[in-house]
Structure formats: C-alpha cells, structure tokens
Image (tube, rainbow over all chains, first blue to last red; front, side, top):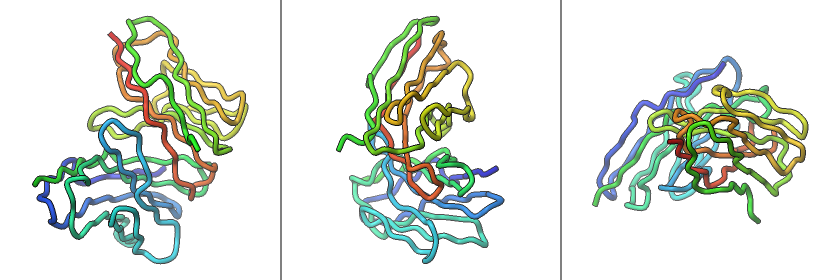
Length: 114
Length: 113
C-alpha cells in the first residue's frame, strides 16, 4: 500500500517570495512521483514528475522538486512566485504494479498575495 | 486534440434520482478512472478500468457503477443519488503504467438535494 502526506493544507505567501510545498510518501516498492496543479474551476494538470535518474526535476512555470529517497520526500519549490501561481497543488505517487493508479495527497492551497 | 472530455459540467439532482456522468478520451489510453474531490480530502478513487471490459473498485465505490465497453468511454452511474454524493467528479486517463501521468477532464460539479 502507498500513501501521500502533504504537510501544509494552506500556504500564504507574498508575490516574488520563494515557496516550498512539502510532500512525504510511503511505499513498499519503487515509486513514481508527480505534482499536479489545479487552477480554480479547472481540472488537474501535470506540473512535473520524477520517474528515475536525477533527483532534481524541473517542471512548468518555473517550479522544481527534489526527490529524497532516504527521507521519502518530494518537496515542490519555486524561487519567486507570481499572483498567477495561486492554485491548489497535489502530490501523487504510483508504482509499477498498479496499472496506472495514483494515490493523491489532500492538497495544498497556495495563495499568493500582492 | 480534445484529451479527456466530461459532460455535463454541472448537475443538480434530487435524492433518489439516477444519472450518468459521461467521460471520453481520444488518446487511446488503456487506463481510465473516476475520482471525487471533496474539500480537504484530496482526490479519492471511485472506480477504474485497465481496458475495455475490465473494471475494478477504488477507495470509495459504494453508490456508483461503471462499465467500459470501448477504449474511449468510461461512464459513471449514480443509481440512487444521496446528499453524500455532492462533490466534484473528475475522470482521468493514462497509458496504463505507473510512470505515465494522469490526464484529467475539467470535472462535473454535482449537487444532490
């Protein structure tokens, strides 16, 4: 069984400040990790993914995430946020045995203030 | 390229009514799934399918039925709607392997009164 914990339900931050959204996971097998973003009244879209190789992965809109196997974490970061980054962010995990199923965290609402 | 298409976008039902939420994808994806999203609870898997004719239950299947007669379509049926089924429903698809990210529809907002 696998699970995902997003450590912050809400993160308020001022425009142009850095931000980190935290995600921990548990799994008994090797995993693939994803961050999705959901803008108001829209579906989820892929922000970035870790499949293998380099532990630092870059995604769209200037976001990046670092996979840390020893700490079972996959934290999302951006050095300078914009108002348009206001959205809900979901961390998800899947493995090679579940035919495409993903388990999601509860989400983190990022609010960027002017 | 339409991706994943869900209809309707909004629906209001009375308790006990039935309805079908439609989902179609044009990416030839093997895997399709239905999630419900409730405030503070993330996305919870209702049912999923790994190919035409094959379906299975997810985390919260009670009160919902699915079928998969074609690769493209994966409808979700509510047989007798209850207020607890008020939620936003998302359909998603991928290539059917763990490394493949999910592609989501824009959701159906359902209210049961």
